[in-house]
Image 1 (cartoon, rainbow, N blue to C red):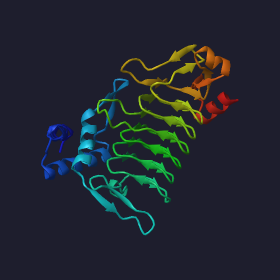
Image 2: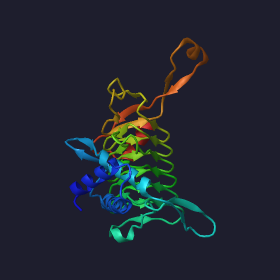
Image 3: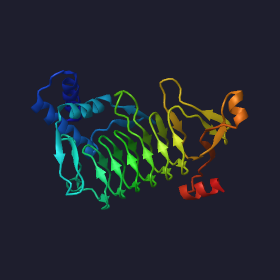
Image 4: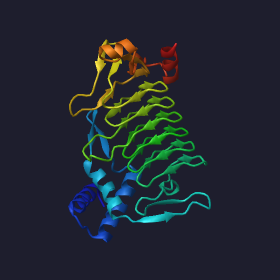
Amino acid sequence: MTPEALRASVERLAEDPAPDPAEARAVVEALLSALEAGEVRAAVPRDGGWQVQPWVKRGILLAFRVGTNVDVPAGPVFHFRDRDTLPTWDPTPSGRNVRLVPGGTTIRRGAHLGDGVVVMPPAYVNVGAFVGARTLVDSHALVGSCAQVGAGVHLSAAAQVGGVLEPVGASPVIVEDDVLIGGSCGVYEGTRVRARAVLAAGVVLTRSVAVVDLVHERVLRAGAGEVLEIPEGAVVVPGARPAAGSFARAQGVLVQTPLIVKYRDAGTDAAAALEEALR
């Protein structure tokens, strides 16, 4: 089934309040296979930006609608129960050189892992996510539903890349190529991290967060209907600013505010840029 035909089928069935179960499950199967192969994505890079593909999310939601809860065998210790349309993903048939290191990692069907991806345990990659070639997903990291992670990205231990499944028209969380995301970082709904950016450990980004760019003396915020965008090559560290109001000032209350302290040079790798910034 071509992507165009798949899109037409998904949109038709998603609008149907009582779709034919057999047809819907067949279309869901085709969508999940196309997502795993990287043939369709929840958002695609285009003309220097990103174009959201809402029909992909509709298809994933259709998978939940037409699936039934079944027991998922996992040995005598663990017990799982989930939709039979969304089981875990086996990388072997893909033919790509993917490493899933033993120890509790789960990749859900409908996720794409590019060639050379390494996932350390335990980690989780949800349906609709795209993880580009040579990316490392470290221990306790999460790649949420429909999140788009580029090539050569390093997701450090306990990093969280949030998922955005609803509303279907909302932009998923996007992390572009060659980004370093430090330990315990959170990149959540309404956020886009441009290529080669570096997030120091503990940075938390959401659409509502203001980021202070000390280099260019500006404050970055998401405009109405837009996303918070971290510029290409930015090095971001945790920071704080005084909370508004006289009572907050009197109490010395601070609000977390990520700070851009420098930008990577063309010849500076991410680790060196981060070390210099923190020093």
